[in-house]
Image 1 (cartoon, rainbow, N blue to C red):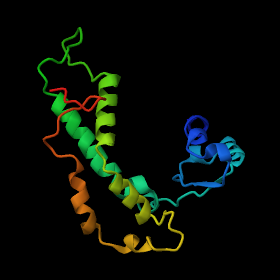
Image 2 (image 1 turned 180 degrees about the vertical axis):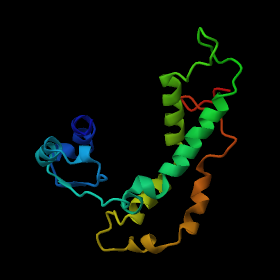
Image 3 (image 1 turned 30 degrees about the vertical axis):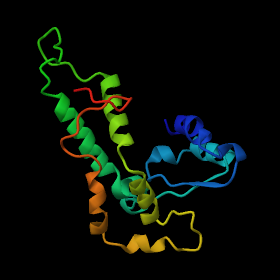
Length: 169
């Protein structure tokens, strides 16, 4: 799966065509460290920097401030859908699971709701910045309390949104 991701996603990222040196920082999962993955990374001029166990919450931007609120908001989308009286039943009378397309709409709506500033701040908290002079480094030492206002990017009253950002209510 990692090899497929490297070919399909990593190989198509902006500026990949120029084959400039890049850095990829995965966790220590064995699938990230196979010989075929390392060979593919060499082909794309990518340095592999593997995080130590337990360090992804400090070194990976998604773990810094996006994953938890994202999952919380996604769970809220599901809990909004769950009691819908129009839900279909299986032949045995049990509720059907959400269709993959429905779940994809939830994921899309929640992802689109993340303010860009939160994503930027997540990278800066990991000391990943285009400011090579170190002017962004102070954010790493700021209290997480300063980021709490960013947690309101989706409220509990939000409705399930479709791909065109219109409410499905």
